[in-house]
Length: 297
Image 1 (cartoon, rainbow, N blue to C red):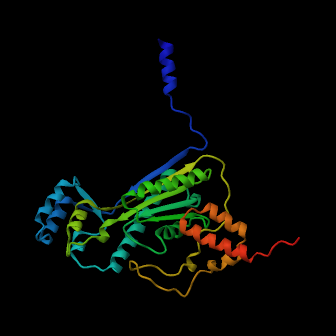
Image 2: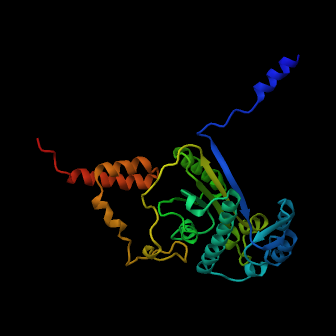
Image 3: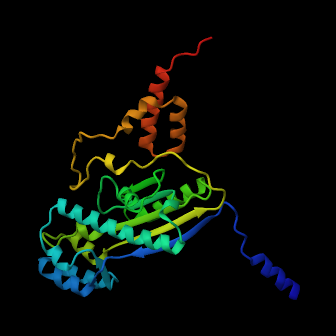
């Protein structure tokens, strides 16, 4: 009887960690300081829901007790254009990203220079350059840090970002990957000219951010390629959603295309998976091959 129990315990023992297993090093979250009770939001919204008083019941049915918002309720009773809303998103999102990154690094007892890749997920605002670039400059990440901004996936963004971060970690032994998710939903909300969609959004959404550090076991390889441009070469910032601008100062990295050998271009195509990047490098390869002289016999 004793032997059978010992055998059963041995069978149920967790398997030993393999060298290629992923490790979640640290996980942190952060929210804005403003905490707003659901009843307070409902009372403020009631006068603006003319003809939609039945929508007030959604505040109680949502199962949300309180939210964290970057602005007080009074801000949402005022008119704000998209330039101002975008500025609110960029400032608040970067502040939350700095908080969660600092906490994550502190929990993991790591330095910013140890981060090899950053995956940033958001759907509620736009920033060009993306916020991960600003974060990299803030912390002084290594110039070879790989950046993968993911935009517009909504509720699926977190799971997709985790999958991409895991792929990066699995493909590179001892690669430290920082996954960041930040949403400033309330920057898009207004109680002026409110619709049913806006009313539902006010019952559900708040603001917040999170960070995860992932790593895979194995030997660490030194990387020397540059993936980050110096701050001086970044050409302008986005303040208005979908605003198209032409810039006089374009980074000289565009000139590197002519210097790429076909073999280097093929390597980049195999490494980069984004379809648009693949299309660009395929065009580069075709141009490079067409201009390469035939070998002499």
